[in-house]
Image (cartoon, rainbow, N blue to C red; front, side):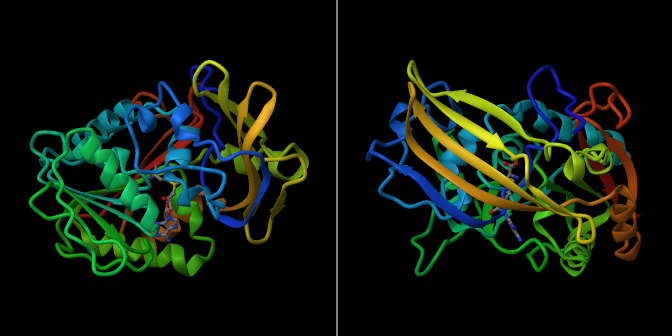
Length: 343
Ligand SMILES: C[S@@+](CC[C@H](N)C(=O)[O-])C[C@H]1O[C@@H](n2cnc3c(N)ncnc32)[C@H](O)[C@@H]1O
């Protein structure tokens, strides 16, 4: 694979988690993982989420705190600042006020924008109840004001007096209040690759076009297109990447993203990626899970085609959260597509 490292930190393939199968491979104690995590935003304060081994994980998304720890290598502040920069550059002087995030997970980008002066409304949408509850808790811990009405059934979004509003929904079928008024819609960390079928992808673009105001932007973060075409998925090691997150003096989280025999189907463009996440204490494993992640790899031409068919226009492709880094830049390791709904 093209394993271009950005500042020695990140690989281009740490993207989507869509779990079709998941099994516990170790189950040795009932120690709470969160109790041992240090130096991580997700665990810097006491959490209602207890990732004990007695709770059998179905997907990593059902364990948002573990998910956030695994992906804590990201510089969210820089990404939020890039969002503001990219909006100013491509929005012809209009102010950023209304934002929607699709597949928000812990909603770190949405939370960052919700605290930005001038931004009056941020809606963060996710299909997963656990992620939304965690996003709620994270935002409140960081000083955000959200009051959660008691849900009758399932997740209830926070009161709308807060700039941040959390909504449960599917990114290919959502239908929100304020349709046609969003200045920017964003979708981070390859979340769009969860949409495996053409119809779903097209419906998502259609929903986006309906919800954006004329002149509004869609920001889509996906794998760098080089990942698909350099042969890694078919003849290489599937782009295997391994990284660690320290959880105190003796513990660490070990993430293995990809395995040598992962299958990539060149017809459907779906990569079946093996992901394992282990909590290690010294040499012993306290918690381990392994799952198969399905990622539809989209080409730039497909993104362009989806845009054209749904009233959007591809404006720019960045290779990092930096306006000076395009896809061919040596620091490019991902793709951030900027699309516009014409005025
Ligand atoms: C890779 S995570 C990204 C989370 C977040 N954007 C981030 O940057 O950390 C993908 C998220 O998309 C959500 N998701 C998956 N399929 C979805 C769908 N069809 N509609 C809405 N959310 C979805 C998952 O629950 C998960 O929280």
